[in-house]
Image 1 (cartoon, rainbow, N blue to C red):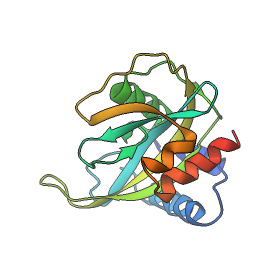
Image 2: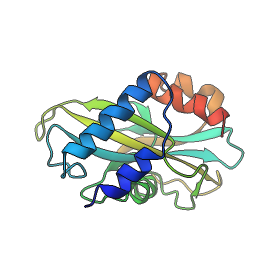
Image 3: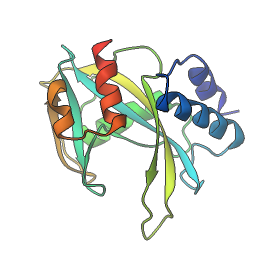
Image 4: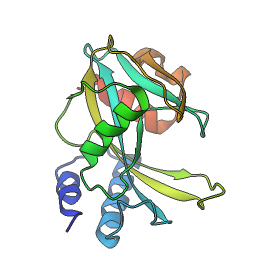
Length: 179
């Protein structure tokens, strides 16, 4: 069963109390009831993976300005059937930023978030059950911008709120302090 590895990761994760804890339990229930949870063809929603990429000194984070959503986010994307969410997060970071020398800043899941994705001409509104991993990388690596982003930048942690002050992003900023 493809979901076993994700269920094991989820079982070993301790979310923040409150909103993240609620999303954590919703994610576990979603994964357990949907054998196709890794496929974007599951129209109600699907598992995605993303990387919170920190500089070596943990004072900056790599954010991309998402082309379609017109907001700053951490790089990430669809699993497209791949149950290895950590591998998917690494691949998405590389595809969206050009950064490929990543070291896990903490073993296991760093954060979980569920967020709605607006409808477009190809898909109805649906949910992304995002499994997030924290990495560290050298800020001197060359950044590449692809068609999914308008810009990619290293942002000082103290300034992230000026780029995206959503609770989802600010929760990861708070967690960065304890890494």
